[in-house]
Structures are given as C-alpha cells and as structure tokens.
Image 1 (spheres, rainbow, N blue to C red):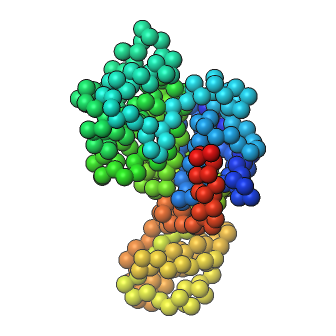
Image 2: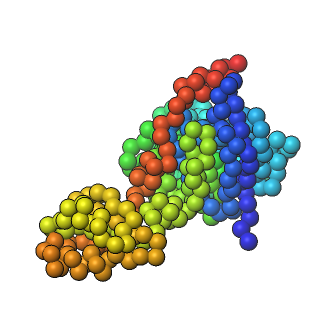
Image 3: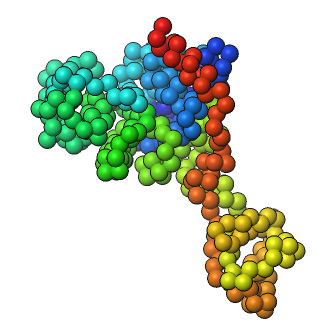
Length: 323
C-alpha cells in the first residue's frame, strides 16, 4: 500500500476578508511527482508556503511524512526541501560554499557534509561550476543551485514553486529532467501554471482555481473524464449539415472541432454504424474517425478561469510579509 507523504485536509487561509485557500485537500504518495496546477493568483504559492512551514493556516491540517506541521513544525520541516519561486541564493558564495553552508544549516552530520555536497552537485549537474561564484552563473544554473539546496539534506518531500519560470527552452528541458529524476527517491510537489510542465514531469495533478481544488487525478484520468465516455471525432471531405447529424438516432451532443465534429453518443447507444453507412451512401466522403480526447489545455480552460480578486490577495500577502 502506498505511503502518504503529504496529506492536507480542509486547509484554509484568509487574508483579511479574502479566502486565498478555501478548505482544500489532497495527498501525495511516496515516490510520486504531483503537479499543483492553476492560473496565476489561484492560491498555489500560499499553499506551498503553508506546506513548507513558512506560513500558518487559518484552519485545517497539514501532515508531512506522518508529522503534524502545526503541532510539530521543527520535525516536519526537517523532512522537507523547499524551492521558492525566487531561489534563496547567496551571490558572494561559490556553489560549493553555498551548499556546504546549507548542509550545516539543515543539520547534516559534519562527517557527511562533503559527501552530501559532492553527491548533490553531481545530481544537479553543478560539478563543473563548483568553485564559481553564484552571482556569475546563468539563471538556469542558479535554479539548479536552488534545487540543490532543497535536496542537500536528502528530504523525503521536495516542494518546488514554479521551478522553470524565466528559463530558456534548453534550461527548461534540463530542469524538467532533473525533476523527473527526483521522483522515486523523493516525493515531489510541483507548483506551476505551465501546462507542458505537468504533462512532462508529473504522475498526478491537482488543479486549483480561486482557492479551491477543482480536480485531482492522473493526467490520463483527467483527460478521460473531460472528454466524455465514448466520444469520437469525425471529419468528412463533404460534410453534412449540422441539423442532418443531429437527426441521427443515438447522438447526445455534437461539437465543432478542427474541421470536423466531436460526437458524444447517448448512453447505451452506438451511432457509428449509421454514420459510416450514411457517409458511404450519401457521398459525405469520410476521412477520419478516431476516439476523441480533449487536450490538457482544453481541460485546464474548462476547469479554471482567471481568479477574481487576485490583486486583493496579493496585496494582503505583501502586507503580511513586510510586517
């Protein structure tokens, strides 16, 4: 039975009268890479800060590796590696000095620090830059250093907040591969609003919108639920009028798409034989008949809209950080 490494329940966070998080809940299992997907302002960063032990919730519970983050925060935080959206980089240090310092802060035993630093630099592709100042590194390598500080103490849970923002395509590909490599040894929660990030790195996805979880499933499960059971796509060289298609028995819904039609059968019905027969006998010239499936982009748009009141939430968050 999979071991639950992150478990949040009824998690709520208020900024004044505004709910940044509204009773959200989900789980991340050991060895899983889970995407936390949502538009800007949906509540992702607030949730990540609470999970990392930086921000207190208004209500609800957070457990990391079986430890209660609220009742036992020091022990729970020791199980976590956290990369915020802006990596905590010390520009005047070399990569090796930085990771050695962070290893000591994370209470890695002194006898193991050098080995931990060398191993982490090797995993993150930083060995060639070990003795360079962080301020002289490209943004991609600075991001690698940020991930390295998150895993220097071999945490069971790794939380990454928008890890590829601002990187070029080559850097993004390298960071995604690094994240995939982390899965299995660590449980990873990846916050992003970038759809390809989720598709290329994650086993599961939780979608958040306006502070609420609106979906929680595997990518395959999400696509199957959104596309409709048994839906199929048809394209003709000489397509019939829509009203003719709508008169064919057994069709529940028809939607125009990419030069053809996505057709959803009524429960218990199979209109395909009749559609194929009419295509042949009435000169429609059938060119394509395939199972339909909505793209992740379409699913995301169905599940989310741009959050109203995001500016208000951001204002309260900035006020709290500065106070």
